[in-house]
Length: 565
Image 1 (spheres, rainbow, N blue to C red):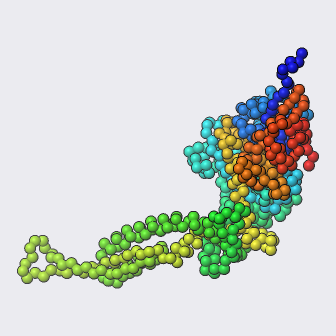
Image 2: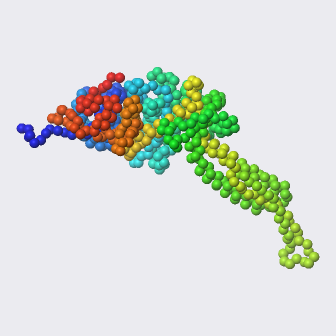
């Protein structure tokens, strides 16, 4: 008999989970994995694709270690999230996820990421005009079992975490012009960026050609540019924008050319925020030959970079002056038998001081010394021997203003190299603006390297770590689209997130989005009727709408297991 003093009400805290699950269904993660992975649906109670999808949701929303995934799902409404399956909480355990990762590791995981990314781009009507690519490293602690898995290994390498004492692995990702992931790859800890960048470009070029995107422009830092890489890119007629390394003598030649010709185009500020301290740019555009091929080169001067470099340059010049003063003192102690030799040495030193940016002046000091051949008291009529020596006296003055100006200019400029088909479309401003969007990929790395997302790597098997890395990349892809959808709606509707004290935010970060969604709770009455509590935060529900979903559909009804493209 039912006790009238008790109600069958369960409170669940879905937060962002239904939204992220819906995005995973739009991306087709489960369907693509089940198609690519070798498994038998007759022998498996739950498909590998379902497990990897749920693990991706957990990484994005729960940010738990693998052994805590069961705890995460215990707080969720599994029946509503997976209505067409017999999925139970007991099946979502670390052993099941470990086996799913083993199966995932046996497929072409890079192709998996690309296919999922392509699905999302199509679903959101996004094209792929430019692709930015870069790598980052993740330091790890512990002992890792087994040999390298394919080309993936955890080993020592150049640490971008500034922990050369630890082993590491690397991640490489590519994003399109709106900042959405289009490729991802787990790399060996000592993989060189100079090798990976051209390899990744060639691989992506082949994939995009198959998908119909044949005019993609690839954007990367100077790791893309080497004589060998330029030759490979040229043979495939690949369009790219990059930074010319300072190791190429042409970089200094072009900087000097821009300085001497002084025909700059004032670009101004490119920052979207228009902050007071935003850098102002000017460019010098020319076409020049390198290794037998003609490229576009853009010499870029940055006002912010000049301000940053001024202190460094002055400090370096102070050290140079100190060294020159020591050399001047040493030269003064040196004696010359004739004046021409002293003048020659003095002039050589003054030229060197001028070359290093200092005004200097010098004079010849003549010293006469009388001495006797024998020791002791000389005889009354003995004449002393007179020795005349010449000494170069040099004094280092102030820094030459013109030299300092040119030095700061050289330090505050960099050279972009580009190979582009449509020169009318790609002016100097466009080339620079596209290159500066490289910051977006750094934002992605901050997400994927955050301790709450990547955290201490808790797997000891290299094969599973390899697979788990691709789950993190999928999580990054899904989270990026959630942020994109919310920001796009806010911009189109001219709306804001309202914070306490009336602060308006029209470009909320992922952290902000998750904080707001974390306010959503659902009541399950009598085991099957779902409703929102009366005091639910209305702005949280509005954010669900900004993400493109009806709160009633994604929180109070069973979710569809697949969503047609």
